[in-house]
Image 1: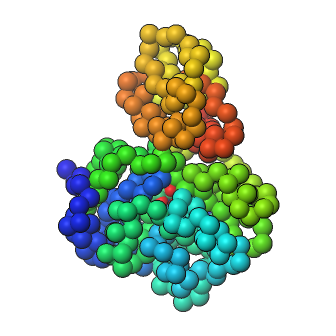
Image 2: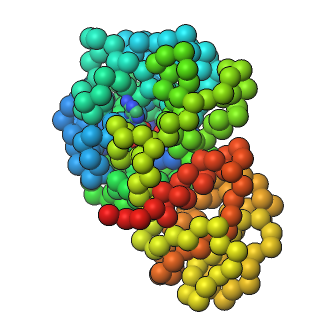
Length: 318
Ligand code: TXA
Ligand code: MG
C-alpha cells in the first residue's frame, strides 16, 4: 500500500525519494504522472521498466516554471508565446534539446528534441520545487493501458514498482496535455489533449498543422496504434447495445439495456465527459463485459482529444 495523502510532509518525503532515484507517482491537472529525476539516467531507466514502455518512446519532462526550461531547450519565439499563454497548464512543447543540458539522454529516446511541460497543479508544483530537479513524468499506467485519473488507478496498474503514490484526488481534466512541436514558426499538433486546438489557434491567430503521431512510435507519424486500451474490446459510434455489451454513454437518448451503463455526461458536456472518460473505461472494464460500446461524441473542442483516445482504445491490438 504505497498510497499516501499528499500532505506537506508526504511531499517532502516524496522529494527525498526522487532525489535518491526512486519513482513517485503524483497528481497533475491532467492525469497522474510517474515521476523520476530526469537528470538521473538510472532513475529514468527504472521508469521505462516500471511502465513496460518501449525505450524509443520519449518522455515529457516537468518543470516548476518556464525559467527552469531554458537550460534544456532551444526556445523559439513560437514557444515563448505559447509558454506565456498556457504555462503553467496542460500544454507540452517539443523543442530542440540544448547542448549542455544535464537531462538524461533516455528522456529523448534518441531524438534531438525534448518535450517540456509546466503543470498547473499545487501538488505537482510543490513536488517539483521540493525536489529541485526536473521530473520525467509519463502517465502512471502500464504502457498501452488507460491513463490514471485517480491514485487507486496507479496502484492497480503499477503497485509495487512505485516507491510512493501521492494522492491528490481525481484529476481535473482527465485527459493528457496537448503536445505541440514548437521548433519552427509553424505550430504542429502531435497529440490533441486538454487544451483544445481552437484555444491555441485563437491565441496564435493561425491554424495548427496536424501531425498526430502514434503514442508508442513517435518517429512514424499518423499511424494508428493500440493505446489507452482496456481489457474489453471497444466498439465506437454505438447507437444500440448488443447482448452482453457494457455501454459508455454520452448525452441524452441513451439506448435501453439491462447491461452496465455509464454516462460520461448526461448534459452532453465535453469537459465533464473528458474528466470521466478514463475512470469510465476502467469501471466498465471491471464489469467483465467482453465489449464496451461507446456512443458517438462530437469531434468539436475537447471532443477531438476524447475521440483520439477512444479510437486508440478501439484500435486492433498486437
Ligand atoms: O498530461 C500529460 O502530458 C501527462 C502528465 C503526467 O503530465 N503525461 C503524459 O506522458 O501523458 P506520456 O509519456 O504518457 O505521453 C507523452 C507523449 C507521448 O505521446 C510521447 O511520444 C510524446 O509525448 N513525446 C515525448 N517526448 C517527445 C519528443 N521529444 N518528441 C515528440 N513526442 C514526444
Ligand atoms: Mg501515456
